[in-house]
Length: 577
Ligand SMILES: Cc1cc2nc3c(=O)[nH]c(=O)nc-3n(C[C@H](O)[C@H](O)[C@H](O)COP(=O)(O)OP(=O)(O)OC[C@H]3O[C@@H](n4cnc5c(N)ncnc54)[C@H](O)[C@@H]3O)c2cc1C
Image (cartoon, rainbow, N blue to C red; front, side, top):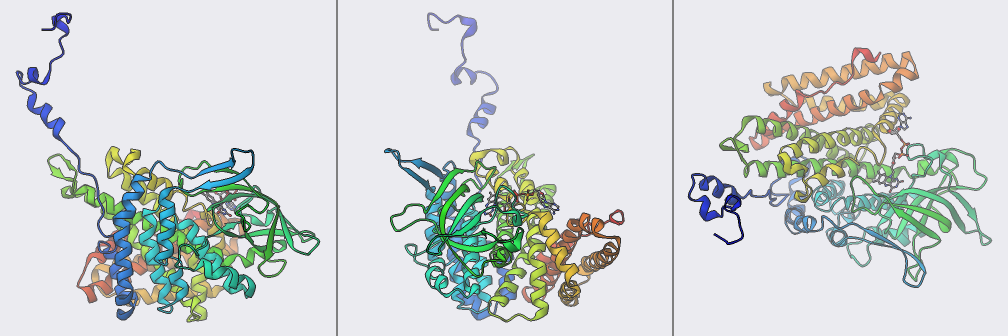
């Protein structure tokens, strides 16, 4: 015994513990090591994506695009994922002044995002949709790449979505000078040539009601436009260009009085063109995305097309960013489940792996069903977008695309938050601990119902479409009917009945609500939109399940359809009228 230590306070060392009868327990605790969840090739492992592509893309096209998907799946489950985990604590920084007192407003991105930008360019995550090597299927191919890429890059999909939207908007504008100047950069595969674009709409006055925007456009003495105002949320503030809205002086108030402008953020010397980056937002999630508040004080800009109708003219950006939003939503759902499933095979509780616990696996099955339903809706919008881009779209499909874009965005935006939240619980306490990388998934998911149009704003948008043209609902009903006509399996009869009943209720509700007046109609718009969204998802899932049985001999999607059918599909109640 040490001379100065009183005998009754002696700390037992491990040798001493061995004298008693608990050294075994002690050893177990010390030796237990929880294996961490891992990811394999995210294309190879994704039965839903692979089965969907087999059904929806011609075999020769699939053969050609498959290597690009395998490679992106490898990166997403391998190098990029490891880099994402290592980059967890890094965030973009804004340096406003240099050592000599010059205002520089320089944003430094994190290492992950710098790599993500290079990979996105090289793998054509935007370009694929414009090269159109496979006609209308190019958009599905590009969305599949984005779906694999997004969850390992902490939402690098944000600048890519806006870049895609800007390229499409400029191409559609007919403004040849801007097309020649910017589109080759926006759609380049060369990282040195590749540009991204911002989309600056939201001001302090509102992101939903952008017609209230206060930014003014004034011509200078040479009749060049200069912009003055504050932009309140500008993600991807490191982009080379932006499309933005401003009101040419003297124009009337409201959305029609705004014009769509193109601007380049920096001059040839790399200086910001009369733009001050006031600060970066301190956000719940998407923390790698440099979302800034900007002041424009005479920023040179060019009209994209015309001096009015900016809100209408920027719509192509919104259509594509909403598609990206839905693809991102399903990709985050898929990622959270992939990790939870892997973990279930590594975590033991009450004497067995979680993967052997019926209730745990039933919980994950519910999430999987929700995800598969969302997947088919998001990719249907990708298919229709591809048709529109190659002009292989008829009037009914055009209306369907117009209606499904907001329905898909708002439905998947709600699903992703619920699914990822539940998936985190599947890890127990680890799901709540930051250095697992898991909480970030939930924080990032939470932005998806908010940006690119909130759930309510998009519900009202869908309602406007339904009220303006009865053929929109007919187009949706026709698509749903086509899905259900193909369904013969008895096990899918009840899900099919649930779809029909929800669609019929939505139609009758809409007719009655229109008679009841605007208050009733608007108040129920979200429940109507979610009912149509979820019913369409179930119809698409039933169609795929039937196909998968017949062509792959696989009943997995049938189980998913039956499970999804037990969730709330029809959200309209009698009390709504
Ligand atoms: C991380 C992040 C990044 C962003 N990046 C960009 C960007 O790059 N560019 C850009 O332009 N914007 C960006 N935004 C802004 C985003 O698009 C807006 O926040 C969003 O459109 C909502 O606008 P708002 O914040 O002004 O909310 P508001 O418009 O004030 O809405 C507040 C609430 O009112 C509801 N509401 C509004 N109108 C109605 C109505 N008529 N009926 C019922 N409910 C209604 C909304 O659903 C919402 O719940 C970003 C936002 C976030 C969070």
